[in-house]
Image (cartoon, rainbow, N blue to C red):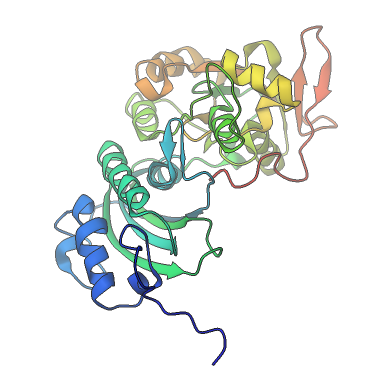
Length: 346
């Protein structure tokens, strides 16, 4: 027989994930009961079957799904666990929903240190508490060495719609464009950690739950035309999608775009544009110009959006979907990259 691999190697593997941890036997039950389930303890998860019977709520439901393949698994400001929870919760939040429940699918690579798995599970527990969500169902698989880069996570989320779902087709000429904090922090934190760059201070990811900011805008009666968390492709990708959807152009003022010094310095050193670099706890907002002052006051009262600023406006369609006004006043098209300058960031 060729290609056969024993799922339980002999000796010295007690502190790492083994193939047998995914095979449905005693080792898998031990992994679930000792490492995975305890941090996630809640009454819905304790139903103990492959699905979860969810309690009803009064409004429509919003559903989302996502996968996380970040490398390295842990980085300044977070890890793959917090990234999965906040990323899923934020997709619900910018859809106008209150995040409620998520599923958790773990794909573990043979040889993954159990210490790393425990760290990620503790991070999932902590992030879920802060995001106000419960992990209510899940699945665990183990693949051979070299097949998963340590760990992949798949999540799905369900939330209750609390406001009309913001859509880019509602954007109008004259709308203001806001961003809730400094951009490009997550992508540059991943890059510095992945490449072990000796920079001081090191960029830190902005990974966080955006729902408190969305909820504050809703409660204040702010008319929101569009919301989007600026993940892969950064703020530039969000604005390009908005421009295509509404048939208008997005004008950015370069002097108003918030970028932390350590992020800007590393971007300049590597020839990267912060507008193309991912965030994980920062969102763009499009709303009527007359509500800018009220919206900024509301956002700045919420920790996750305390750095909110006005960065531009919506203008009639130009030759380019997104343009940026540089320091000398020229309007320069903001190109859309063909691919990501930094892959595997979420």
